[in-house]
Image (cartoon, rainbow, N blue to C red; front, side, top):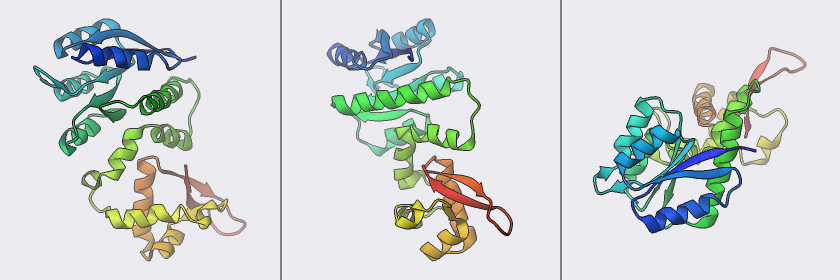
Amino acid sequence: MIDVKVVIVEDDARIADLHRRFTERVPGFSVVAIAQGLEDAKTMIRLYNPDLILLDLYFPEGTSLDMLREIRAKGIETDVILITAAREMGPLKEALRGGVFDYIIKPVILDRFVTCLEKFGEYFRRLHSEEAIEQKDVDSIRNLNPASSMSESCPETLPKGIDPLTLKKVKAAFGKDISGRQEGLSAEEMGEIIGASRSTARRYLEYLVSIGSIYPDVVYGTVGRPERKYFKN
């Protein structure tokens, strides 16, 4: 059983208590402190060394994004789920770049909240296991992080050389029957499917590997040299 220590940072006492009750519905999670301001939050983080922070965005003294950056700069080993009423793209992009595990928009829906914590619980358990890992394990752990999917869905966050329309075609190819073949898809096969060169197809496939959507493996055929193929997680 996991034991995830949670600090809630929320200036509205009623909402903070609601989030506490939601959190304690999920086995393995316990709220160790509630902070109603950013300075109070820094004290609670120092005292309790939480595994997870449920962090509101806006406070009378400013936004929590500076505190998020400070947590990362100091190397504090805690994860953050941002819970906010903000619907602007700017805070979302900053939060994703700051490494939040998830971004939940108020008013919080219980099912969405619980699903998020359950995914975090599995993510936490996998990160704290002492087992040796393979590439597919790394890709699977990354895939548990909802923020990876959100960053992938925002065209602004795509790296140079990755076109969103071509990327959509590559993703669609993994949804067809051909992707169900045991041998997976090579860069050459993907190029034929999307009408692009082998090198272009490989660039898109490696990008999907980097965000945990697919994983690569080396397939040994009966003749010829080993071939790198890609499989959907």
